[in-house]
Image 1 (tube, one colour):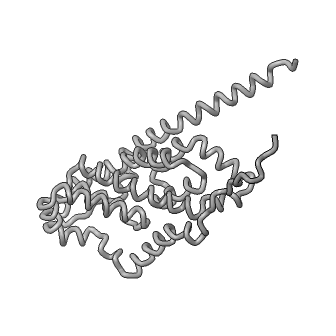
Image 2 (cartoon, rainbow, N blue to C red; image 1 turned 120 degrees about the vertical axis):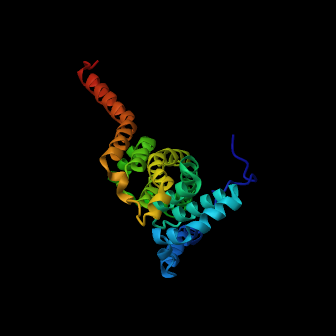
Image 3 (cartoon, rainbow, N blue to C red; image 1 turned 30 degrees about the horizontal axis):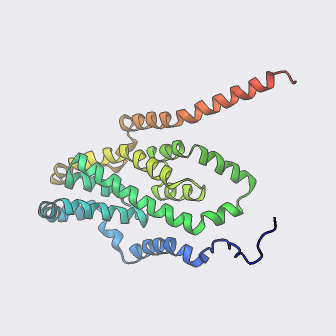
Length: 257
């Protein structure tokens, strides 16, 4: 049965031009450059918090829930533009809203900002980099994608790599948005809890003229439980590798038919 020559042929979906796909990522990069060029990084410090602490507490008392939403939006913008100071922002959240609300607000804000970076990077460069990748990089990408949740959870739990870098790499490895968002949301909770608890007692430190130690997360009594969680996150990968190794050995021992 021959096809009807009069029937319209389906055209492949037209892709957006490269400049349009790269625009969101370019805006985020441009915002980071403008942030430093305008000198706004000088305002991210404990001295500024000490100077304006009364105004901040009055603002939260007056606006209540709206202040919480504004904090989440501000934190999301910081994460989206990769502005350094996430630990300080989390401490401020614990100071303004208390431990539990501070944890929730900082985790939501950081996750939303991370999702924005992920989508911008995937739209701009994800397909291009995967097309140019060699066979070795593709194998690594396949391994990362198969165990994406576990790997991402470990990268979020253990503060070895910068937050912005962990936002970008999964976008180039074809990780799904749902996996990325869920691993990010869960993985940043322990660190957020540590810094929010520091912020919950920030008032007493500021009264004494002291500042919190931002390296507190690397103290062994805090780092060891986080490393334990990271090992638990890696457990499914180890189990799968052991099962695959046993299966390959069983196949090797099986006599050929």
